[in-house]
Length: 272
Image (cartoon, rainbow, N blue to C red; front, top):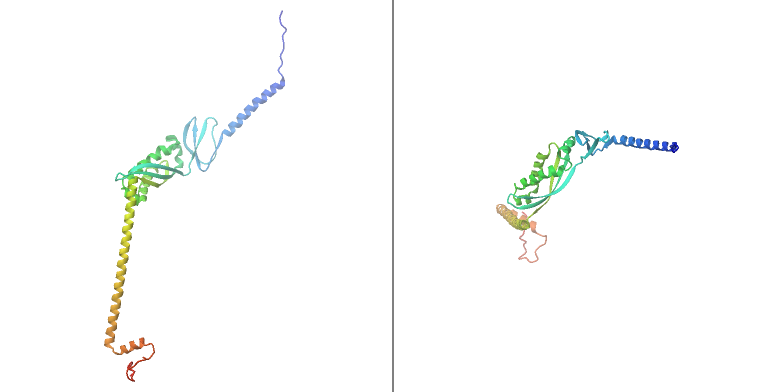
């Protein structure tokens, strides 16, 4: 015996809910697509647009921009001045070992950040800058003896900085500034340098004492010569003019008469 046919009716409310869910998903996707189409680049950044992972040669400046969602991506590159600290070992011309601590500052060439990212990548400092620093330091330190470096560190620094600018100031980097923050030589060499400096300071002190004694003797001699010359001139004047003897006596007289005299005369000044 055949079963009777049963007609199943779907609740209209459930159909509406299903449509709402579908439209909600579509709307959410549309919103996501809309907002994914826009991006911003800050003033301290430059952007590089990639389509399916392939970077463009164009460099995108700061501001609001558009891209194709899910197809294009944006890579932001910070273009603020870079500062890195490092440490390298170098040999001087007289084969003294040194551990050198340094600081380097530089800027990226903003219009070429896309080439930098394509050809080198984010690790450009370790891949490009550090090898050039190592090479420049070894070459410059090899041009100086250790004592020359101790006495004139800035000459070495300038030579390294010039070398780095010639090597780096091209396509990717600019405004290179290099500073040596510390040089640590072998302990025996540093002890010898300190002893030498102490000896030089003692020698300079002794030299200054000698100069002082010589100057005092010179001044004493000059003073004696001046006094002798003055006495000679004075004696010659008195000899040529006897009246000057009386004048000198008047200049030295204190106005008092002598208490003991021989006779009644006062042989002091000829008033005629």
